[in-house]
Length: 134
Image 1 (cartoon, one colour):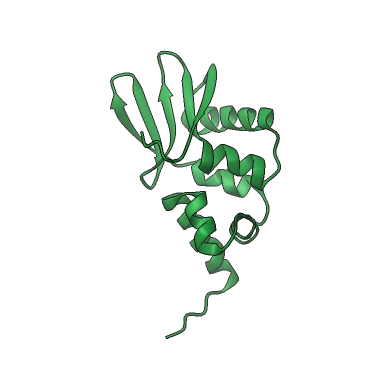
Image 2 (tube, rainbow, N blue to C red):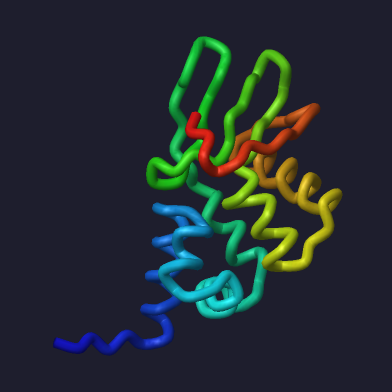
């Protein structure tokens, strides 16, 4: 049986894969990071950032909160210290390597995303590798 997937369906499927399983996994499934960025996000970092507008929130410890997309951890936030630790491989690296955004701009984008969508103002941002689950 063959399935015919139109262009709009491809984009939605890729976005859902990234949201549920992360960018690296989706890149392996689709064939390359460039294809994910091209087909799934039309080479537009703002389309990629929209994936993080509705993250679920859970309390990990009395002082730590985890923000996730479909169970895929993206941000660990400590409100006492106003520190956020962001998933390196599925957020930071994608913006730098995939979309060509400079590191200092990624920090500004991250701060804006957290403030605009979650009312989180951070003083410090760090990054964690993909294999470290929260």
